[in-house]
Length: 543
Ligand code: VG1
Ligand code: CO
Image (tube, rainbow, N blue to C red; front, side, top):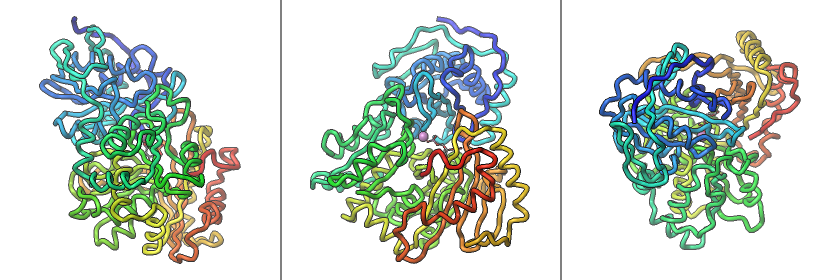
């Protein structure tokens, strides 16, 4: 066993996006591609002597190969120890949890999250820092700079580690500990939620369906919901992580989790439905014939947080990404706590959570989380809802309808135009930017523009500034249209259009969402010239 130095040349485009570096598997399979990026992460970190790294992924195609490579490189870089999930499996929230619990320097998550997997699907890699959260832009930019200048990387020629067996092994001077993928995470959940109350709920005949979508959350949901909370076997479906997610898109929204939605729409539907994504950090919450929008879910959890033992003291603040609906803002106002508006991507919540300024965070993209870790957390959100259902005895629909009665309803939808021509998408955004200055005060029919701008964020903790984080057109009555280009796709560009309308009157709280938003949808299409630029008359995915 010895450490080799291997000559290499830079690959263009190794810049992490909203959540790490994501490319086609075939791109990652090129010799030196993964190695260049990992060496650039290690070079950015500097001396790692005596330090511990956490390593795991969502089990998608290429996961095991990448884990073995990274272990050999971590040994060559001088890490004292790597904690790796059994079988190379750790969900994103579990990595965050383990980093914090074991005092690691950081962690590497291998996942392209909600993107499809398999040999011709996507792969990804992301670095998380000592607080357990995604590296901030200052670090991801430094990593990217390294990838442009890289000349060599260092790697041990040691044999593969047996990832299936829990226990210790060694590569060079470095210890490798294969850990149970679920244990640390499950222990944390028990501290936060009233497991006894949830056990009673299931014992009383409450029925649930959790769709693991053949992705990483299956083992976590099975161990906790069926194992610890006593839900009947079969409550968790599609529970075994598969390298290609069974050919499905592991993205928990009503379009991709069609099996779950059909079940929840049936006459004998269970009381509660939920799903999570590829790496286990997203969640979708569904009642009987009733899907909850992620923005509403955040607001409902915030309004009722004190039902859960971990949040009994109340919330310090709420944070949401800019495109997320303002339903949470109304709750914050009622609670007399601040509501922070950040750019898209969980990395922007880290400083607020570390500083104790926010307790709950959420994104419209089926992401909810809290200060218990520094990632969004799918199973956590589902347990929070279970705790809420157990504490109140109400149904999902009753809870959400009552919430609307009290706070008003923020109708909300996101329209995605996927895999459009990159140049055309950039031009669409550029031409919108030029229009911004002229929009304020304009009457667009049904709506008058209050202001229009390109969202810029100054981090209240470290003062760092992030520009061009989404174009927003805000109407005088508080309705909004937001335009952004996705930073997680691997094919062309994806235009996201976010639509929100506030309706205070309970008489109008039960309209079909697309109908309630129809006037705004028309304005969005016209103002941005979506059909002209993209050639698309309709979005590819509407959630
Ligand atoms: C999307 C979502 C964003 C989320 C990100 C990572 O980013 O919109 O809210 O944080 O995915 O989620 P974008 O740039 O494509 O809009 V995950 O679960 O894929 O790590
Ligand atoms: Co994810």
